[in-house]
Image (cartoon, rainbow, N blue to C red; front, top):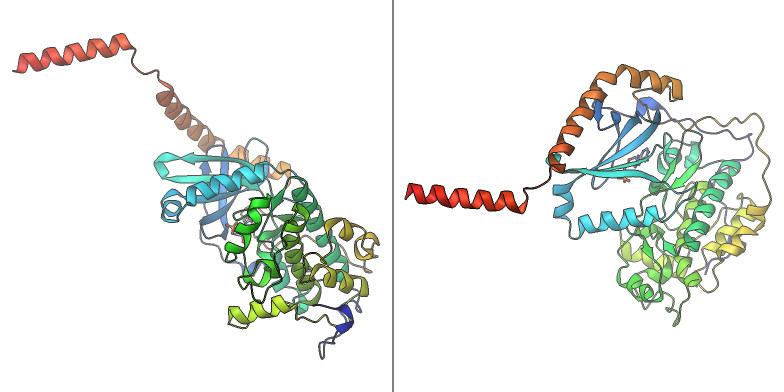
Length: 397
Ligand code: AMP
């Protein structure tokens, strides 16, 4: 069981709050780009690859209609077919995301297949700041100033509260799935293993313990029923929801301490044993309110773990932290865009330049649509055709 009083000092680490912390700007030169030429896809001007996931590439793009940046996830239908239930799981994910609407949850703007390319496209809000993982990797000591960690945590809390209202369990909350926009605001993404919560799902959750990332998995979900806490007999939705609270607690710990509370030591069973035993320490330089909240979120017994209502009124959440001196919210720009200026007029001038290509694409599309929309032959036409073909057959014979 975790306990804040068991804080131990990480030897040699000084308080990160002592020096008037600043926000971290990532170095764009760390990122390599392969493709440089903008292309047109429907009404989008598509630029560089900005990420790669298990199902395909993610590219930046300008929506020529709104003159705003978007991100386009490009999924290969071939790859999806190779994964058991691949296509169905994408449809499920889209359905779940479309049932949510919150400023801290990444929205799907639209999605469409292009059959002759065997591709499926998902157009997303553009997150110019990359992932929380990128941000932490580039932060001094791999941790954030308390002010910034709290701000991001409040965003995660907002997302969790909205999901709780809609009965959605994310099941894979981790820094890789938390994206930052140009202003440094956070959004939860990747609902690939999310589920709609019901009592029946509770049994399924432990059966599917492999789902999600081991280091973020709640003790009640891990695969060892002998070491893990007992599964509550009649779980309610709030209790089921506690597994996402656990994962969010791990994220808060990582943001503030710069390390994992349960480090992965090569052997996943050892990791699960540590998680089940709630064996972790919080360095004593961590802000006491923050440390208390982490401990409450990382209670191994979900019945004792703090709920969303408790988090909302916790001092770490309730009491604001003064902005550190001289800190300005610099954008977390680690995505080096093909179009460095993302303001509307700059993007509008790109759209203007690409007008001929956009019009050509529109024409091709219209032609494809028209040929698809051609009414099929009427019964009369069909009958005439059949009788003609049988006549011609007769004549050949
Ligand atoms: P995913 O396929 O969702 O795992 O995404 C792969 C990578 O693409 C992420 O790690 C991000 O770096 C990037 N990415 C995904 N979605 C977006 C987005 N909406 N805006 C900017 N970058 C994104």
